Structure formats: C-alpha cells, structure tokens
Image (tube, rainbow, N blue to C red; front, top):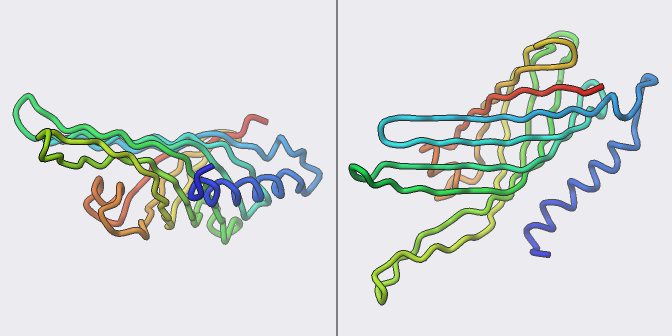
Length: 191
C-alpha cells in the first residue's frame, strides 16, 4: 500500500475500532451511527465547481463524533467560447466533530478534517506539443467551525466554514482562490 494512504487510513481504523467498543447511558452501538454528507456547488459564467462528500460516522459521546467517507470534486472552467478546462479530483476523508457546549450552544461544533486527494497535474511535453496528465495523491488538513440545525428527529442540516492549512498550489487553494472553504450538509441517524 502507498505510504501516504497508509498514514491516512491507519488512524481512521484505530479511531473507529475504539469508537465501536464504547457505549454510554444504556444506548446500543447502532443507535450512535449516523450517515449523511456535505456538498458545495459554485457556478458562474466562467466555470463551475461541484464538491461531494458522503460520510458514515459514530457518536462516541454527546461531545465527540468521528466520520469517514469518499470525496469527489469536479471543476470546469471556460477558457474560450466552446472550449473548457475540466478536472476531476477524488479521494477519501475522515473528520472529527467536537461539540464543546451541547447544553448552552447545542448547534455549535468544531470540525477537524483530513483528506487524501488524487489530483491531476497537466505537464506540457515540448516534443509532442501536447499536455501530459500526471495524477498524484496529496494530504490536506482542514479545520474550522460549524453549526447544525435540527431537521426532524435525529436529523440535522449542517454548515461549516473550514480553513485549508495547505496553502500552496493545492486543490482547495486553486478551486477556492482562498484558504477558506464552506460545506453545507445533512446528517441523519438510522436508529
């Protein structure tokens, strides 16, 4: 297995196995499971961005949740009439949500997220006068603040403002034009 992938998924396995062993207040393990995801869509006359991230997670206690899932981003930019530049990014992510004051501010949460994204880089080959596509994996760390609003029994709408700590020519920096990104989502418990 690729070393960056191992560094990404090994902590996830350790956290999820520890989380599955814990239950409190007489609740069952399956009642603490939740599913959902977040998305972001940006469109203009110059291009568009679609960011999808389904998740499956576990509420360890009233203050702490862990989740993981795949991540997909599609970016399209119009460079000339009838001609556009398109990129696909994919990978996986794990996140940690902390509710510091669930009694006083029940909707507030802090989120830390780690992602491994496979991105495409276009390199110009002067011999063939064409672009060569090279794909590579890169880790991303995001953290920020969010709010969740109840949307029925055991379901919530979420919105989060996250800061990208890898401010270089990375996926999020190129797509956002800023180290800040937002995510809107929905989570629900099945049990």
